[in-house]
Length: 85
Image: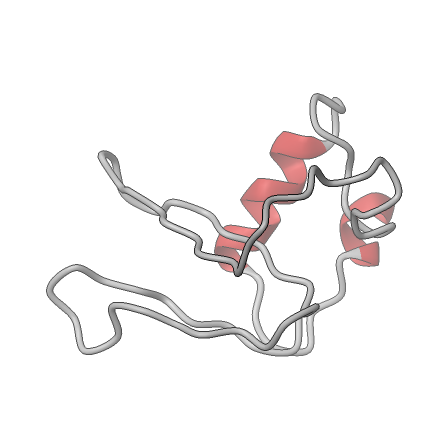
């Protein structure tokens, strides 16, 4: 993890802008959370190979462990440590 930003409805940070092409993850830390991602159009479906190799595929049994790691990981932590845990 190279950067971490926590957004809060009543907090100082309520939005974040990422550079185009940056790998990123979003995790809702509170119930009834709405995440809204905006990208320039037109829409192009994501290809099978357009996902980070270090993240589990959707539906993979290790995905819940990865999401749990994301909720507590800090800058400098590596996703590869999740796979070896």
